[in-house]
Length: 105
Image (tube, rainbow, N blue to C red):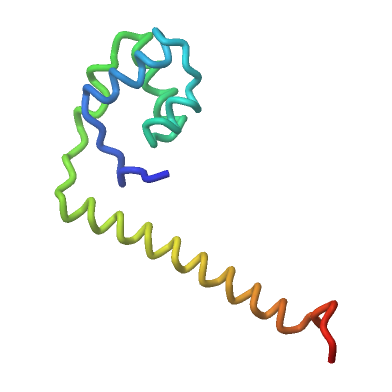
């Protein structure tokens, strides 16, 4: 799931996510997966909508620049690559130790 760093979401996106839950009957996790937004965030928006304060959500956050968003994307990608690398190292070490069954030696 590709997420926006330090979550800045537009007012329209917040309203649309809440509508999907309240009017269309989708579950919060489903909406989160569809929009790549954490379910806790959507849950908070729904709660604020019920209080009538959804329009105040996010008013104190600064907008992220393109550079900040690109940097966050690259950091996520690097973390993913490091995880995959570590997994492959462990797998290679495991298979290097194990004798291969079914081989003639």
